[in-house]
Length: 221
Image (cartoon, rainbow, N blue to C red):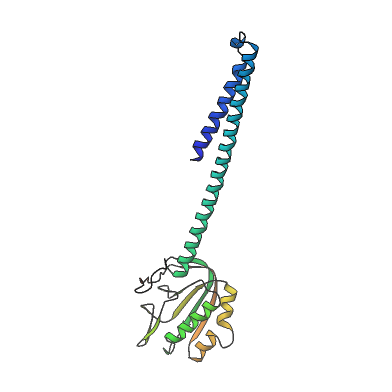
């Protein structure tokens, strides 16, 4: 039963009670005997009691519907929010937020796939929620890094030097993750490259991950 129908029924019952009460002030009962009038009043009281009970029941039903609607709206909002969070983690939707930009210069072409993967892992461990390389390669759990001659492929996309890594997350934590002794900046320097880190109030990542349908894995029933 919809909320509108419940409200209409409550209003109709209340109106009926009002009509019955108003009928008492007419002169049509002037000729009714006393005992008949007593029975009539008893009947009216009984009818009013039944109507009152029905109004109470309908009011409870209406309140239950209102409460159920609020719970449904809250559940729907939470489900939508969760889906949006998962789509960001899966790389199937864009993302925006604070973070850092790491630019790696590699004039001697000595920084390859393994070095880039190490850099990504450091950022992940530091809490990066969305990562992209050169604005075209979205990095997610299944993204691979591969040396192809002097170039590097990230998730099937060829990445040109210099490498630009954008990571969304806590700016201070991410920045410290690549600056600490023995970390990314030091390793790049040891390979003859130059790495710079810039904190950003807002980073927008539009690159999406390549979604591959599972060949063997199936959802559990």
